[in-house]
Amino acid sequence: MKWKRIVVKVGTSTVCHKNGAPDLRRLEKLCRTLTDLKNMGMEIILVTSGAIGVGTNKMHLEKKPESMAKRQAAASIGQCELMRIYDRFFMDYGCLSGQILLTKGITEDAKGKQNVIATFGALLEMEAIPIVNENDSVATEEIVYGDNDTLSAVVAQFTKADVLILLSDIDGLYDKDPGIDPSAKLISIVKNTKDVLHMASDSNTTLGTGGMITKIHAAEIAGNSGIPTVLANGKDPSILYDIILNEEIPGTLFEV
Image 1 (cartoon, one colour):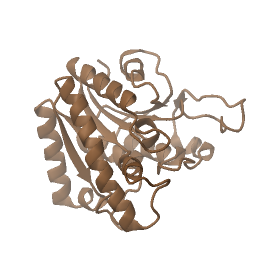
Image 2 (cartoon, helix red, strand yellow):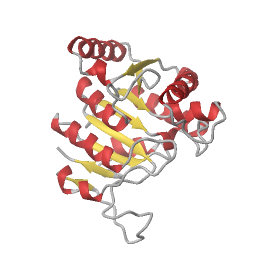
Image 3 (cartoon, one colour):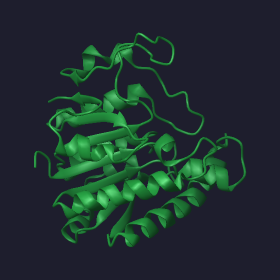
Image 4 (cartoon, helix red, strand yellow):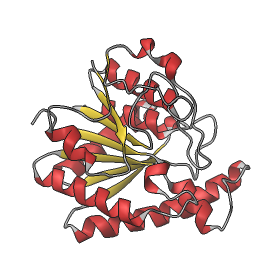
């Protein structure tokens, strides 16, 4: 195995339909794939977005609430639903899972960081899959990461992961915006994140918070700890087999 400890981050567009409702078929396949990889001897950590999107849908709202209090309420409602779905699917495949909700305030506190690292270690020792999200129900602007791309890179650092895999709604990093320019070409390997930052754009989804800029920054954070990052399309979670088991990686590999 080229990688044993793997952090997989899934974005809102991977977890949810466009209206915010959970994409059950994709979530089921994600849990099945991750469990199978764990059964092969890998240690899996899942960083998931989608709580606010799922909560927004469950509250019958057309878009994310604008006020902080209502966004936190949506996150609280959505997180319960999201974890219920993950827990059920992982249980169906005989896999233990455990929830870890983080804020920047916790991870930047020395004692808090130590406790978080210990919890990750204990869950992995018990062969459980930690499911991580930002604690959006209590986070404020002062203690928030704001996107799970950055959070996943921090988790990769904390757990000394071998690789960070970002599953998004795009095949990888392109030299131009493929939604505007059909001549855009996929970049297979990035050796220096600073060389490609100008190619990035912010998210244009109504429910998500990330974008290509946050993904490049996440790759930079992980890379500073010697951890490579792969950016790939998460519309079919079985792409994880190709990323992890094959020599030729689909998507974009940010080398270290």
